[in-house]
Length: 62
Image (cartoon, rainbow, N blue to C red):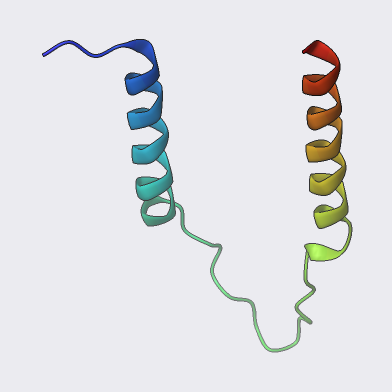
């Protein structure tokens, strides 16, 4: 059974997506004296900017 490059990459990404959450563990909780802070503030804007920049580059390339 022969695998081409696309199938190997797809299978690798699928395994990574399925296995990574199981092997990654969050840090242990803090005492009650520490206030928890969400990290989502600017991170979602940076991700959106990266997606937009990538789409612009792909459009310009084609």
